[in-house]
Length: 370
Image 1 (tube, rainbow, N blue to C red):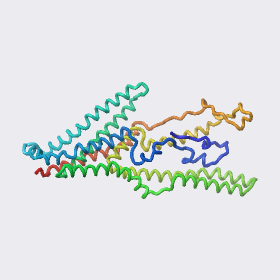
Image 2 (cartoon, one colour):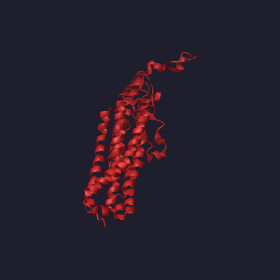
Image 3 (spheres, rainbow, N blue to C red):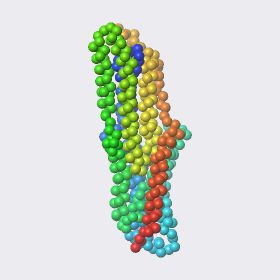
Image 4 (cartoon, rainbow, N blue to C red):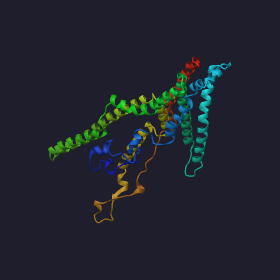
């Protein structure tokens, strides 16, 4: 939720600070954010993506770590290869069979969940929403398959299933917990920025200095010229300062995301967030729409803010006519834009799938079954 305070609404016919009228950093304040809980800075809030990212990826590892090494320990792999079954058929069968053993229950539970949502009378499942849900489902299938292959790769590289389990769990921790949380830290070291509060304070200092110059000139033409000059120059200076900081922040976020994409976990989260309308591009879109709405509130202020004539001194009191207030329009990114934002991360998951299978395939061709 976002609060747009009345004091920050722009209006040329009102007094008040220029900074509050033009700033992109002040006057639009988020409240009630889930990140007020510090545990969410390390772990995602428990939702559908969280279950796939954490629980099912770990299950995929546990299903796959002994596919090859476990059969070697039990001597069944050696017996299997005494027949005329090619090794590539065995490996593909292990991959397909193990993956399906995970995906079939998941697909059934997913179908039941979608059905329960669709039949609820207070939820309208539009075609756009259904398309987004199915894309998230496809990303989940791809992601689960990737982690099954990670376990399969370590199983082909290990002679003992216990070793494969330890290596697979280490890979899971590295990809799911370490990389996504380490990426922002690394990004901040390469793209260093002041805090947003520091930019706000610097903008306020610029305005205070120009106001001080106007006060030094006293009354008369000089003061009027100074004030007029401040009104003409200050908005541009504030916006230039904030735009430069926002560009730096954008570069910092992009670098963090690119580093995090080393992990299939981050690629899955970015892709799912993009198609669900909760990604970084969607957040930027909402911020722009809020700034536009703040401008609209200021321009139409006289239509819904009037003197309260029921009070003894009406000029000291105001009344808000809610029926005359302009409504906020929630303009989200379209499905095509969301899909375009998820293509890179979808491609990363696909590349992981192909590369991991090739590694497992090449290693298993020379795997010692004795």
